[in-house]
Length: 325
Image (cartoon, rainbow, N blue to C red; front, side, top):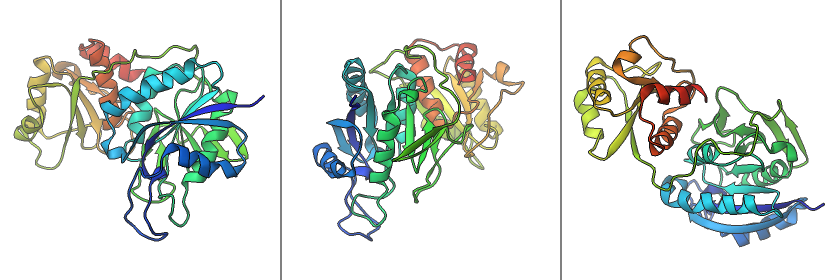
């Protein structure tokens, strides 16, 4: 039986061109999906691929506008009985945010795999073709279902809730936390670490095409109340703090955030450190703060946006959602 996969393209380095095999600079999102599928057609992949261009841009420019086109396109593909899985090609800079948003808002009954590249298509050592071939291997595997949205980079399979970009260059730019990776993949093989963990086909959150504004404020030496207030606008509905250490912040900034929390503005403490849990502290209840647990600031922002879109503003209820990640 032929495996049929739908490829939804958004651009990024995987579709980028430098104009030179050794140039540092390049233009993201230059190759269209039809040309790309023609390029991978000679790889001998054991799947029938059909493509659709959602966007063709640098992932630094991806946000709600693209998400509002991408999400219904994935839902349409999932509803197609002839489609066995979905691959999303994406730039790496915001890949983890798109993957996490999709993970929270899509069912897990068919594989959804997000893939990118760290080098443009005409560079020496282009990793895009291998990553794409690996993504086809993963999306074609029935055991990929029930694991949520997956990310394939550098011969590793990551869960969307764990994956993060940790390097600016190099093909091993992605890691997972708290789980490093959940599988190893090559174009010819796939090894899973553990069984699927998501039961049933329902999404955690309903899709919202109007996500509330949540800002990330970055803590640093000398960060104070004025630094907080400059970043919080009248349309802000929630705040994530990229705190020092375990989600900490200078006292002046903390007092400003406490006042905002008491006015009903949810405040989540995350960390600017690359890895580590941010646990609740005794004063969080009095302050009205939420601890992000394993989520980094950018993922904490996505989860808080979805909670606020559902009308959940109580700090205890928000904390419960973060504890469940």
